[in-house]
Image (cartoon, rainbow, N blue to C red; front, side):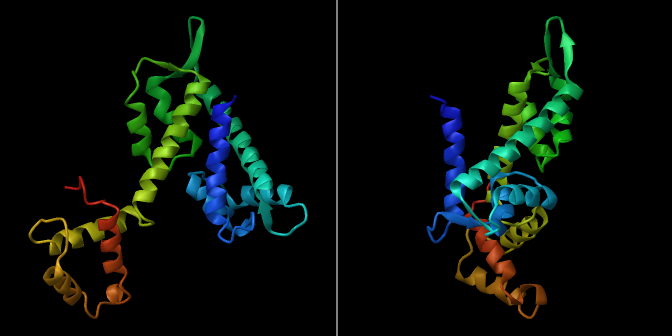
Length: 223
């Protein structure tokens, strides 16, 4: 039993189901870019359209799960081809063993342009001995681990950029005068009063941002 393959299929099935809101068993091709982002895959518009043209033979702009799975398999195969090219460029031979030296691993992963945050790459690489040689299978596992962590971090941000989050965190701390980690009635009123009439906040974006930041717990660990 190939449990790894089954796990991947179930992972894709869950992502597919999340976008199959009406339970029809199909999703719109217009939603594919969002799904790819949800999985942490970085893909160009041209490449996505190429996959759609291949799999959506009837031009319905709808994909069932089998078609979706086929499309994801094509993307994974293309991704692994790119991994192999980068691996070949960075690997060295030591005695009878070949692999990417630990000191060059971060550069190799960054070369893939698959992970959107260098800090995550560095965090994963720092766990490994610097004198290790990384074979191809381990290289793939490490890149996938970086992607998993990247997706997890992006979900914690609730759709905000780092700059927006810092604004909301600063605003929250400013009005959480007692340092309780929550904004009470009087503090909330002061926050609303401070932003009255300001175009940036009239639509409630700052308040909504602060609430969402608080909800996902992003204030923890921020100095």
